[in-house]
Image (tube, rainbow, N blue to C red; front, side, top):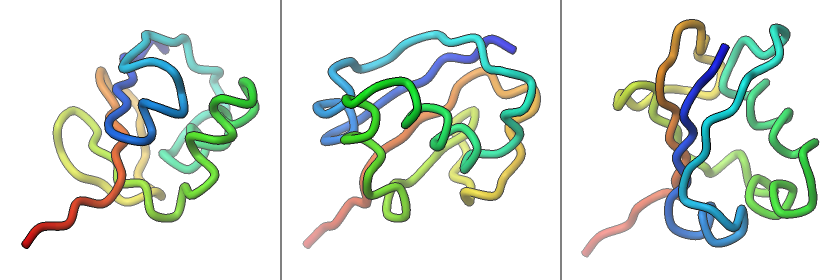
Length: 85
């Protein structure tokens, strides 16, 4: 499955790119699986996803939990929590 990944804020800075299109292995079923697979791709991804528990995710522009299935997703975005004042 081919999917567009978007990275925002410090996730983007640590990954060294704003976006990419990747071909996902068949065993990647959830957002958590995807983050674990990304960490296996190199030190820049290890750094980007070392705080994966606080990273927010949107699948096809809908915010989702880490245990959400990503079957048929066209776009997955990762971003740190946003604070406001």
